[in-house]
Length: 106
Length: 121
Figure 1 (cartoon, rainbow over the protein chains, first blue to last red):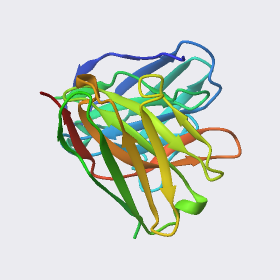
Figure 2: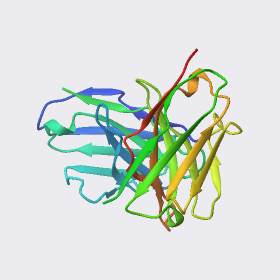
Figure 3: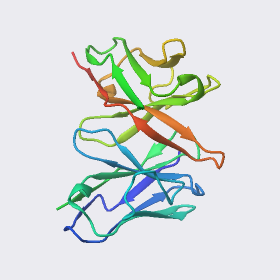
């Protein structure tokens, strides 16, 4: 199985800050990586796929990068609605696996 | 409008069975991949199963042999039959569309609101 490790597990930030979350795969996954945002009591929401392609409707302050084993999700100028938990997910092979999540909090 | 509605969750004793359904609106299950992802209380996301357009199904090791995913194209629903349930199956179960690209990646781009399954005596 491909293990996905996110860091940090939580980050404290303020509105307007730049936040970067890292996701590392236990083996190479090309760019078969997605990022999701989940708010309390809600289903996850797809942000980025193919490591760096923004899903339709997602604000441009979100960006993704990386390939192989190391990936990043960056939020420039954090907004109040961005405080949530973020997950990475690989689709290189079954079982599909998620990272443990990164909580972005005030 | 595209949306998914899950039903069938509830409280069940260990060893029992439950059948979850996911009603799909706005697209056809016949030409989309559908999946289940679960989330234990206070925990992260765990992929459970997917059914492809060609009816191939894949399962996580934790549910293989106990869960069965199927689809009914006439009703436009997918169903997850869960047998021999364990306490560790307690979770919110989300139905999601699994979109795959020719480039290879796959993502869950549409999600339902989830249905809670609690396995407890």
